Image 1 (cartoon, rainbow, N blue to C red):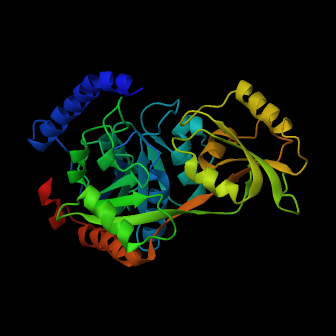
Image 2 (cartoon, rainbow, N blue to C red; image 1 turned 45 degrees about the horizontal axis):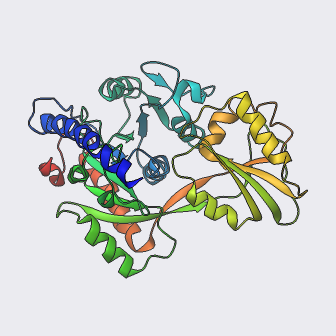
Length: 363
């Protein structure tokens, strides 16, 4: 295996060099970055996925929506539609993608749109929603055509970009030094308890620059929720067995959580953003039937629920006890006030003008 990875290094280097040249073209002004008059906050990562971008966007929505009118724009990964699409009450993951749909269903009062061309998408949003006073870009760290006023970079506690390599050797989309473009770095999926020793160790690994602030977040799980359209009810006593299936980049945090809910777990993994078929539903049903315990349920992720149960639950799963677990992220207590204030201050100080906050001088 090590020999195979060694053989892939030239390809990883070539891939990263191409992206490095592209980034330099933006840095040197050979390629243009559009700057908007309203505050723009970008949330993204250096890796191929699985750092928790969407829950962090949801955190920002909850933080800002009381005093501001935020809108969210994403590319709508793996949707079947083209161009600019605004989420509507009847939207499905086919129309806008699973992650934008999740945001739309959680925050129906917030405008959510998708467009692979973020500049065009933002222009359309500002035309359609002129009262907008902050734009949240989901998964946009590599989207240099838009110059955000505040850039948030996420990195997985268990797979820090400082210890990773470009694809195909590792999971990075570009060289790790691309992290210098971020104003805020959040280490995601850390434990609920965070020791000062751990903070120091990771700070030493990531080596944030003087203009950057480092924060830590963790996942908070909600109660088991029946799949939309399902009449499933939880057993009265603790579940004995769980069939867990998911099509996400990193299933390990959910696996750890499900261990606390049951005595036995059967895991069924699909690719990230997997588009489920009838064959998949048959496989899930068979896996559930093969669990020779009466007190059993099926669990999936909130993101998978968006792909499965919208607009309606598949017939093959309709009579089964299928649940999803909603999640939200929390910034660790010792960092929360500082993080919230930095976000609010940026939006307040940049609303209604085109100026960029001082920390943007490095870009």
